[in-house]
Length: 507
Image (tube, rainbow, N blue to C red):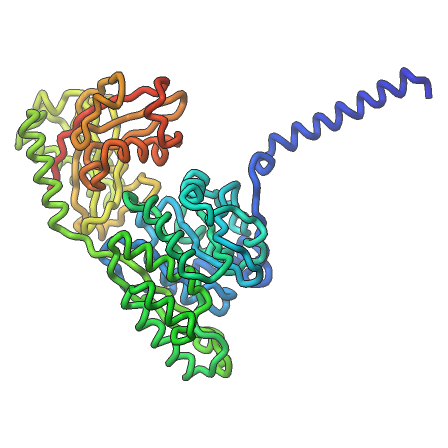
């Protein structure tokens, strides 16, 4: 072949290879690491339709007792779904529609020894239900707390204590991220290390769920298993992590996920979660039929009761600030906006119609930003708003009330039966003011918007009231969890900071 033809043939081949590479790089899966499912088709169905139908069926059939309070963790089994699925569904049903954004799966290694704790900090996990993204910011924040915390990918290969939780998370908790964690060794110090790290990152957040993965007793006759598991559950109710760990190491309590559960109990102690509720107990003899050698399964929650007095004090503090700073609205105007919000929700949810209003009050006709927040038994049930007024205030409130009831992606749409159970809170916003630096931000008191480039996020003033955050915690959480920016982005001179106040009132 003449040399010039060889050159052009080679050049053509390189062009094809380059084009192929560019196409591959454009594919979503090229830009991030994807952990493929190892147990699909064996431990649970390998097709999306069959798996979705199975999980939906389990969730529909489970009827957990309602938990009144803030849930920190669930204890969930991890056997094949035909065995443990009917029990696991109770825990995941109990945490539906609670606004969780990330689920931290506390698992362990059944098959490999590993010195330390492996935390998956990149990419996504893939199951037949699709891909679920790793919360990389949170994972890396946890890893930064101790040298025993690091990423070791091989620990997650074929590990059912982690993988069996993920399809349930996808089915029950829509649009959440995950942080898979696996203990490599069994020692109390590692549980303490992880609990300290978790408490540090969770102390001011209510949108993160811990999923402590464990089965109970293994391969005893049915009656004996019930007796052993009853003792283990009784010990769990005490929520005394160190005592429980000791009982687990000597076999007084029998469970495979001792480290997962101990870490969850320790985290609960550090964060003040002091309640434990059993949602469902059964063993494989109940779910599968063979009672000669059974495995025990438990769904339970660790939570804390909400203190009504806290919300009363928060309301009192807000009213005092409004009194000191001057009111935007008078009592009659507040009352009318609350009426408009409720009438709008009733009309839309019950009849599918947007009610029309005509208001003569000049203040209610001013273009002002507003948020409408719904609470059901002190639990957030929806919150949507406009930062700036694009029409009369009364119309903004009417529209945001409907959006809060039906359009908040964190929650299912409000049902007609729920309307009378929700309380309405309205936040009327002042004009935004750009400030030179965070030195001009007052917490509590100000709402804040941070923008850098195309990314931005906002916290209402009441976020500081309800979390007790310092200014630095407020701004760091705003950047990392609302704006998708590094936690310290508010310190960057290129970031724009805006402040505003809000007049907050409720029914």
